[in-house]
Length: 167
Image (tube, rainbow, N blue to C red):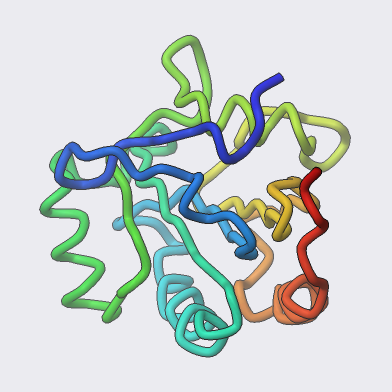
């Protein structure tokens, strides 16, 4: 099985976004959409990012249009919308698929690491969240119903844990 840091998904400009650069960080990965009932979660995600980024939190958003086709077609449109409407400053990567034969490898890895409710692996809707510790271990998965601010306790707990020594 691949390790978290081996992935290098594509950013909005078509460039690699190497997860190796996320070593020793706590990472919150979210599949997002611009025209969804949960889209206002961007505001809380940005709040978390601003509050904890200096302590080692990185939020990485993956736009996805698989759920109700609720995402813009072009990455530039997605990023402009997020910046203009919610002031988002955390990385928003290239639009992907979370499920199916053409699913992004990052999401295949995340889903195989931690199942959702009732053991379901597939992503059920926009704004599902995965929390990754400072060692690249996917430790928890949250549904779209979990508001980002509800993640403060686990984020703080993980930020307070030093990364394990790599031998």
